[in-house]
Length: 240
Ligand SMILES: [Zn+2]
Ligand SMILES: [Zn+2]
Ligand SMILES: [Zn+2]
Image (cartoon, rainbow, N blue to C red; front, side, top):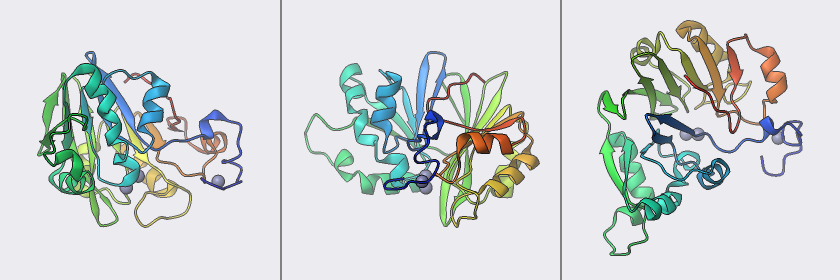
């Protein structure tokens, strides 16, 4: 956090240096980025990312979408527009925030997107993608259950509540990646206690915590968690 001198912010542990939350999914040589965060450019450069085949947007909050303009080098490299998936509600906000992208201007340097509205499960690059709704204060946010023939996992970000009908869709997961902002309660995010309750209820084989604030020092938090739950960190790569 800018200007903060707390133990996490001055920590020498690389895992305590967090950019905004985002994940890259790779399957069958295709790549999906979930949220083009404010830090998308830095994240893409660090990873050496040279292409993206689809973008999923969970919701239109600054930390999750403000990197959208930085997909342009990928458009330039490939000469192709990128399919972008979001809910009706999220598209309404994205079209407003990024009005210049969607307004016909004749300028060839704009980000090139093909908008898709998500309604129910669909198949993409050999995976079944099931969009699910979670509650982020008063805003509905899209979570994802992603399945292949062998494995199922889910990405549940930015929520303080998981509705019953979404909970039933999050059973039998090999991996759950879930919001855990801090120790204390928060009006629009899960705090650690609530996150752990959901994990206990859903019983995924493995769980990773994300969207963490400077409340959490990686090493200390790791030592406080059961064996199958761990804090995620920037650059973490794993195979489901
Ligand atoms: Zn701090
Ligand atoms: Zn948010
Ligand atoms: Zn967020």
